[in-house]
Structure formats: structure tokens, C-alpha cells
Length: 259
Length: 259
Image (tube, one colour):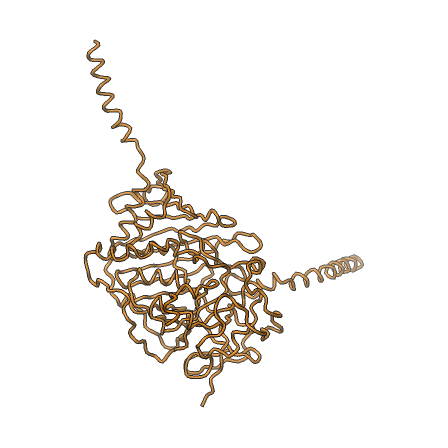
């Protein structure tokens, strides 16, 4: 008995000494970011090599590089209590700030008014600024879009078909890489709904800044399903899911009034 | 004695170039072109692709992610890809000539973007304009041979290897911003066994690597096999396209913007 007491005492001292180290480690931003899980467990998953293009693809850059290139790195305070702070005027990310698409209301997808005024930053790109293109959503019908090209359907002559596209990308050799004359980083977004019918239909005049999140900023405190759309509540804000490059992202939304 | 010696030397002189030509390595550019032509000439193909790519993290650590894809393509207008990322996340892409459908089966979410056109137009639109990744997107195009001819600056023959399941020529091609290594099978219908793309100008020189298996050229696929119908309980969500600064201005022409 006399021998075990000093050993327990030593163990206690070691534990007390290690406790602050453990706490500091757990509270460090890096570990906290990784612990949130999500894509790559907090690691950047997209990079120049991620798509196997013959030109390198723009990836998601570290925040330091993002700031250096003049993009809106930090608009305001980071999230408090897991909820992003509503911030002041949106900053320009190269897109127009006054655009013609109404937000909120109607029967369409309800992007919250002021969703374009969310914070822009939580670590590893959790919050991103974005652009919204059109508001038409989900009446259950897809109108047949105009054909952009005559297709030689069932044409056994592949030579004719190939000739049709021979010139398609001659002026854009790097179409699978970075867009030309565009500064990094990938920070903005376009939300595209069914109404987008061709590659020339996403027009600047239809775009509106929004912010989307790679992860919802809390464990959803409440969920509601309205017209087959699920809404998630974090504090006073509602979010809905969206799809982006193989991942689910979150857009702030207005919860429709239920009858 | 002198005359036979002369004759022998003369004959040897004639045979020597032939002997040299027998020992010549296959022309690497021709091998690359033959492979590209096989793919571009096919009315469709299916293949299993196992991809890996490096992403250099903000702290400089190079991390490798991966995914497997089962790709089916039937020209002109059907494309399907079932994908599993290295973290287990599954996604599907379907294109039927009128719309692209993106499915996340585990989250019971799908997104649909109307787009009329061919597989070629869809692939370039998705990668170039909507910034959605399709690994090795150029392989899907009928213009692959022409694009390679334009992009490849030089080629070199490395070796004939038997390390893969079947003999293959190892070829390296130098492009403007990347080095492409390809392992191409022998025979009249050369196919890709393996590809490595090194982005030599990017920090950390990340690589994209892909192994191909179960090639089927011009398979007969029914549209029903390539289409997707909404199962019960799935939520339709918006498609969010990350874009770089100012990209929206590039998508629509100036004339369209003013309209």
C-alpha cells in the first residue's frame, strides 16, 4: 500500500501537466477545423490536379493567398456560437451587386433576403460567397429546352459527328483548366436551376450574390419539410441544401409560410 | 574474293537500314493518336476508372484523394457516371440529351440542370462553364485526337512494359502546363491502361493518376440503362456552380448581357 500511493501521486502530476496541453490542442483552430468532418475531414479536397485536366484546375486556396489576391477574405467577425454573423454591405467579387432577380417570396426557391450579406469566412472555406442565377424552381416539370445544335441522332457516320465538334474548343484550349483572365480564388458561385437551358444562358444580368456554406453552421436545431424541400434551422436562420460538384452545400433560405 | 566481299558489303548496306527500322521504337505520337482515334470513333464506350489525385494543403502537406467511376457513354446524347469517392461518398451523373441529373443517393438528394445537346457539349459546358469536375473530361470528346495534336508539344517513348495485365507502350507527352504519361495497349484498338498527369508548374507538382479497366468500345446500351427516375423521398435541390472572379461575365456574351 505504501508503494502504490507515490505512483498514483506521480500519475496525477503527469495528468495535471498534460491537461493544459490537451485542452490547447483541442482548442487550436486547425484541430477544430478538422474535427468538424465534412469533405476531406477539413482538408482541402480540390486542387489543380483533382480533375485530371490537361490544364491545371483552380483549387480552393488557403486564406492567406486569397487575401493577397484582393478577394473578400474576411467581411466581418467569424461565426459566434456556430451561427454566422450578419454583416454589412457585400463586397464586390467581380460580379454586379445590384441585380434583377428577386429573392425570397413566391413559390420558387427561397433564398433569404440578405443571404448575400453573410460572412465570407470560416476556416477552410466553410463560407463562400456566391452568385445566384435564376429563381425558377421545381414545379415538377421540365420544359423542353431549345436545341443548341442539330444532332445527327442515329447517324452511323461518326466522321460527320466528329467534324461537328472539331472546332468546338479551338479558341479555348484550356477549357478543362482555369478560366482565362480570371483571378483566383474560387469563391463565388452561380446557382443554376432548371431554367438554365444552354451554356449561354447564364447571364450576368441574372446573377445575384449569395453565400453558401459547405457545412451547416450548427447541429440543426429544427427541421421542416415544405413542398418536398427540407429546411434546417440554426438560431434565427434557415438553410436548405444544394448540390455543388459532388457535394452537398447549404444556402440560407426563407422558410415558407405553411397554411 | 574481292567481288563476293563487295557484294556482301553491298547487301549488308541495304539490310542495315531495315535492321535499324526493325529495332525502332514505336512512334509515341502515333500511338497516342491511335488510342485517341479509337475512343473518338466509337459510338460509345464504358470503362471503370480508378483515380487518385494529389492536393497540396495550405500547410504544404500533399494529400492524395481518390475515387472510382463507372463511366458509360453513348453518342450522341447519353452519358452516365457512377462515382464513389475515397471517403465513401457516392454520386451519380446522368445526361440524356436534354438534362443533366446529379444524384447523391445516400443523402437522397438530386439536382437537375436542363441542357440540350450532345455528350461533347454537355461535358465542355459542365467542366468549362459550370465548373463541375469530370475526371479526364477530354477523353469523352470526339475531338480528342485533334485536341491532343494541338496541345501536345512533344512526345517520347519510354518503354514497352508487361507489368500491367497486358503489354503496353509507356509514352510521355509534354504539354504547356503538364506532363502526360500514358500506358497504351498494343493491337489494332489501342486502349488506355493508365494515365499520370503531372502539373509541373503548380506548387508541389501534384499528380492525377488513373487506372482503366473493363473497356468496352461501342457497347449497346439502352437509354433506360443510362437514365434515372426520381425515387420516392428524394429532394430536388439547386445546382451551385463555384466560379472564379468575374466568371459570370465570361459565360454570357456582352451582347446577351445588354439584351
